[in-house]
Image (tube, rainbow, N blue to C red; front, top):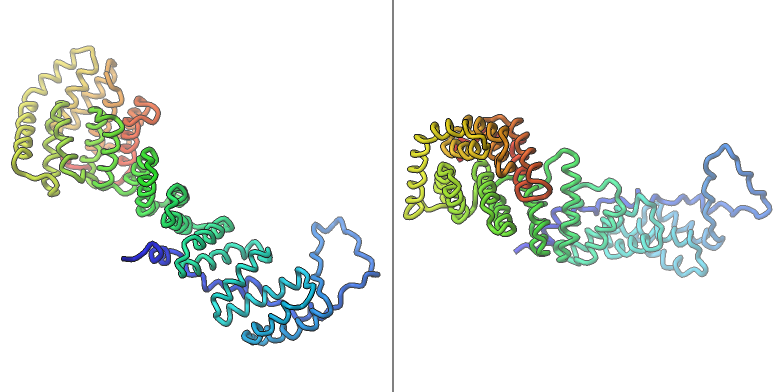
Length: 448
């Protein structure tokens, strides 16, 4: 079985190609041969017209300049093994100042990289960072180099340490790099941090108008499960199904709604309807389809029950024999009765001052697949007033409009449903999922 390290290694761009010889250019021999400035020389007067004074030239002792000139010649000639061999003698010189130590650290970086002595090269990078010799633009690539090295060594803690420092030092970090940091936290069982950084990858990508990777949401789902964070998990799944609708994601969402609402019938009927009428959605379990059928039958929408069962059977999820077949035939028989009775019920509802009656008859027309009449009756009921659940009515209206391909009107209905439901309620969340679905370009579903 492949480890998390192997997956991370494929994601983490190899940074052995970072040319530290470019980042840390060779130091010119001439600067060691220049005598230090004489104390008697007057300092230059500050010039108010110049925004900055040039940085003072490094100061080197006479003894250091003498010995360093020999090594500089080896550096110029790219005789890297000889440079490596010469450095310990320079290291042993007494009273080296910071500038002189930086010169030696720079040469050690160049020489160990050129000779391919990876452990020595890594030690040189760590020294360079630890002593603060690196320029701001060098810090990120150096930590990335160290992260790649320790990743190859399967040292999780140090890989994470240096990759996090790479991210912190990189102002234009890419979403894929944020993902890698999230994965590193995940393989270290730091689930909250993993969810945070995967979320940053998602947010940055979405803000750029692009679709985040499906795997980022899947990994976050695992994090929220480990954290037992149901609220975070639900929000993540809802965002995921908006980009990547499928029966598995819908089923997870429906299960959470069911648990959180204690199987509220209105919420669950709308949740099931959303999942099953989505051509790219559906439900992943027999229990899901049977639950939808039962709720639809009780609510007076046998056509929904029939369409749901037929889809489940067609997809091989619901067995097509026994009690399931009996329930399907029961639903179809009820649809046949409704077809005969609905015209009279519609006429009676028109005379009733209560809008709730129109909405209930509108549900009957939705059940038999007459979506135009559904729109007519539900809109009439809403305009009359006296509707018991405005959010439920608006969701039914939007669902019918979407079946007719009238997307803009459907979106308006879903927005009205969210407003009527209020806040972060489950009905408002369902309305938002409907609205996102209405924004997708897809053929209108044909009967589930």
